[in-house]
Image 1 (spheres, helix red, strand yellow):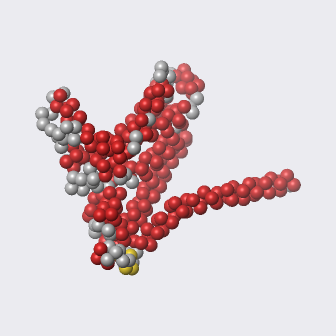
Image 2 (cartoon, helix red, strand yellow):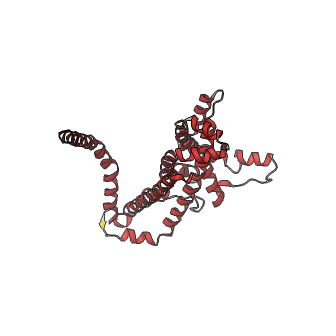
Image 3 (tube, one colour):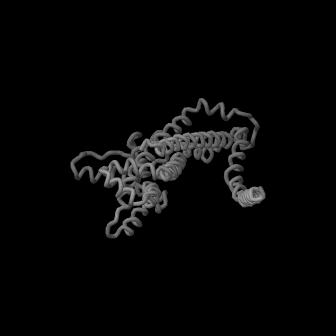
Length: 307
């Protein structure tokens, strides 16, 4: 009994110490996240634009009611969702392929790994400007290559067509952020003991069976982390779109971040802009939470024998 009492007291002291050590981190999180969103919610309850001479006038939930009928906002939500879903899916597939290649033993592997991270290390604004030139209809590399190959005999206005502009943005984003996912998955692959694959092959398993039954279940935590990070980043994309298309043509590539920027900085509608921030934040939290829940269920089912 005395031993249990001592153990209980030690655990209580450890919990108290751990709680005290968390206070600085929680304070930083509260300052970085809680205060801005609380401030934004408070501002969203006011109308502050050129019509009020930039003076805040309390209007309750008028801004939120206005949002319900704002077709431009819902179009921005749709554009953002399409961009996020397609780009993250492609990045996961390509990132997995790159990670599997970089996990193999070959001459110069360290150099190849370093080079593969260059797109992720480049500033997004500079990279976006480069891709805007690549997809330029008059002197872009893409049109030049397609014409030389005889695939097209006219210049395609990639950034001037609604569908093609979205495709160009997705291509640029996939090129830049695939290395981010690949390096996370590579860390997971390197943590898998090689003996598992040897034993599995001795049992007559094919390589694709080893991948499905060993690799995927064991790197599911890394897949979850990579998807959550990329989902949040892609949903809040701003700089790449701003540099390449500015949200055009005709709002076809306007994301939520671009719309919020235009509302606040161009139209000086601060109250409505704050409401857009609050709703977008809540939608992002809900989407990330749902994604995490689904992926966690997949991971648990995999541990239970699905794979």
